[in-house]
Amino acid sequence: MIEKIRISLWDVFTFFLTGLLAATTFLFLMIFSGGTSFREVAAISLKSPSWMVLVVGPVMLTLGGMLLEPVANYADRYVLKYVLGWATRVNSPGLKREEGILEREIKNNYLGRIGGEIDNPYHICKDYVEHKQLSSTFMVFLSRYGFYRNCSFITICAGVAYFFLSDSIVVGSIFLLSAIIVSIVFRRRAQEFYSYQAPSVYRAYLIDKLDWRVKDNGE
Image 1 (cartoon, rainbow, N blue to C red):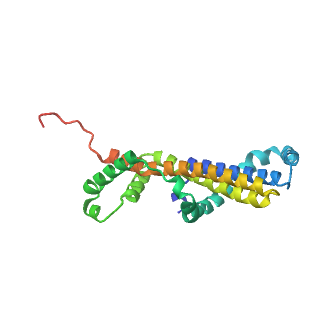
Image 2: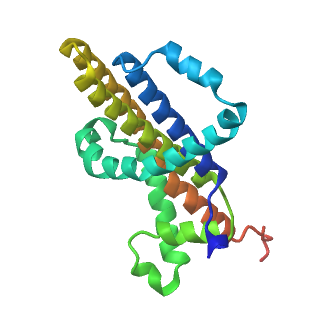
Image 3: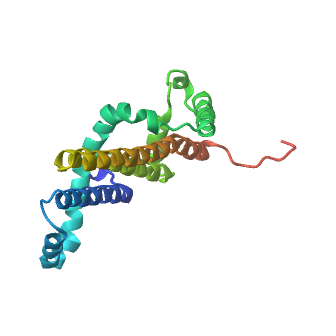
């Protein structure tokens, strides 16, 4: 069972960057709220053994990113989707048209009897592409989607936290508004990468299925 679990380098890289961003954001919140100072943080970093900084640090940041990822996922699905959805909706007519053409081609010609019973062939094509290791492009899009979604979640959480920690309601409100704007930018970028996944999977599937042999005119 264990050997069948696949974790790509893109997953590890995404988890590490998410953990790094979360830890950095937490430190800045502690500093700005008066809980610590740059000098204290620098002193602790300099006193830490090199093996802890180079080995334990990245492992803990990656683990932190893995633990934060499902929280960000559910928050995006059930909260941010409705709070920020109006400002982060991606409209790509050309990409949607291409996705529809590829989807119909696959359903009509490559899924046999079940083609008419399946509304969306994405998951079947994705499993096929992953099983045959045809392309990793969609994994790049998926990891970037996850990273920017996590960034959006971390940013909005930092804005809300600082709003309540700040001694000045004006400064706290400005920081919260700035965090909302940055969170919108991150989430919109995440939605762009999310929209690239299905066409990428469909292309990889069809490239493997299509007959690319050149036929003579006499045939």
